[in-house]
Image 1: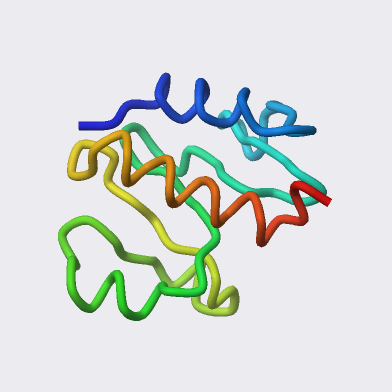
Image 2 (image 1 turned 120 degrees about the vertical axis):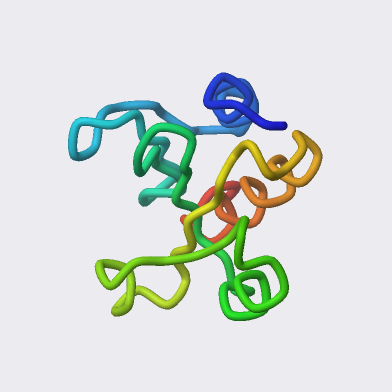
Length: 101
């Protein structure tokens, strides 16, 4: 099970990532937003695999009507993934947010 603190630790390890509030929640930015706590225990990340993730693991990955116009955003229930999977998600989100360049 991953936690918000795991998100924080992974993001701190990525070059150029800063943490600051977004809509009253902790958020992490590369060149653009890469991750944000949506609500307690739920993280927003960017991915190119939103449809596939939500289709195969709808109890873990989902989105709300708020996210419809942003096809790379997906919500993740942290309690349903392990830290290794979280790390992979955050690495992809970092890349999509312009990190590492």
